[in-house]
Length: 212
Ligand code: URA
Image (cartoon, rainbow, N blue to C red; front, side, top):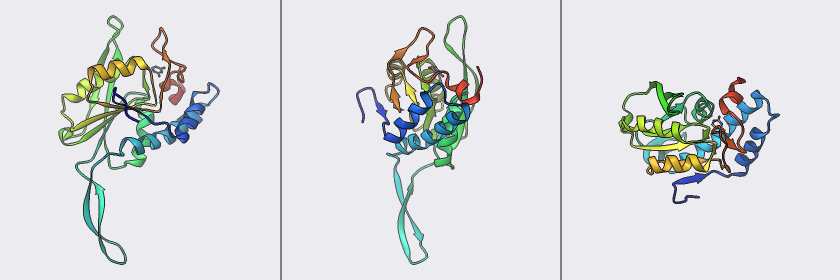
């Protein structure tokens, strides 16, 4: 379903079920990673739904036919480090030919705003559609900063995929980049004073990698 903020909530029963398991505090690191991997396949399925197709001629064992394949240059998936990699791995299982970029941002202790410390992108981004991934769309500042950087490379289109989004993050991202479609499995209630999503699932990076 699409709404004026350009948000699609992917609320398939399998996604809801797996997200509930991920939210539970007793879910182990290994289970969390596995569930994130499974959910990311389902998110990838939805986010690529409108990709354009073209016809090519192929030969089955019985006869020639015209059949459809995705048109254009390979897609580029961009992971916002480090939690983005948890979504990236599953999406790559479904779209193994995608190119991959990484962007790392840290929060400046004075300004509290994100500062880029790493960015490695594939070639010819201007000829590719782009999907930026980060499991938690919280304040939205990292997402905005990452997309600011990506727009300098002039991709054909940009979509943003998260697992859980806060209304504040959606507003911030949509205000800065209204052309970017946002996909998420859930819009949660709010942020707390530390910028964590409530009810959320905690720190996604820590839960994926078993850090504190
Ligand atoms: N990042 C996280 O990992 N979790 C949150 O709730 C917010 C930001």
